[in-house]
Image 1 (cartoon, rainbow, N blue to C red):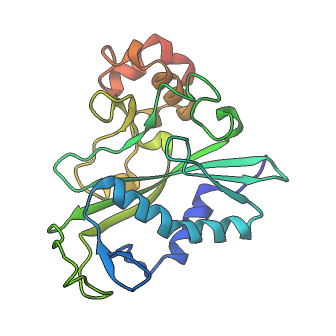
Image 2 (cartoon, rainbow, N blue to C red; image 1 turned 180 degrees about the horizontal axis):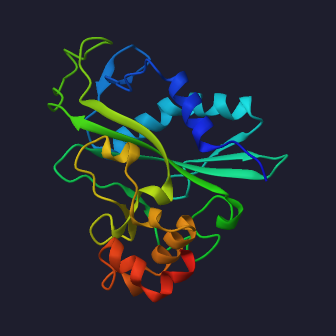
Length: 245
């Protein structure tokens, strides 16, 4: 079954956004005052999602796809579907900020990977591709607090972050072996030491011929394997993963 390939999608997306800084000053109100934002990841993720949406829709329209949004607790951020071919893409916006060891959280592992319809817009098995539009940004100085006597207008304040890199990757290429955030049941990416590591680096599942299938199996059964499998070598030598080579 043919469909829009990630390489073509990536090429067109970066052509369309070539001169974008991805920077904002804040939220502008009906009186043209700007209300600053901070560099909190949740806030910035929403900013990137809203900024990326027009380009995503333009690409989808060009190739005969329809774009649907999910709510905050439902995967993915964008569902991109071609009704003629039934090709369906899940595209998630993910962000992380620059530090010594950088990790993305890539969504839950105890929902649709285990239950085909849990916390997902359409059944998991109807999505052929799972892509990440990722942003690595640097946190800048915190914003100034304003009162009603000195609310800023557009151009009066600076952006609280600087984007270091933007990438589009297959989700399984980014997945690592350890959960991504504290006690929550989130998939963690491989560890990046530099922002651009996520543009070209490949996680442990890239060693398999059936990489996505190996990744899905591992994370659907995370509690079974995470203590025994701590490295690529241990993953490759584990008998349960022989069938994915």
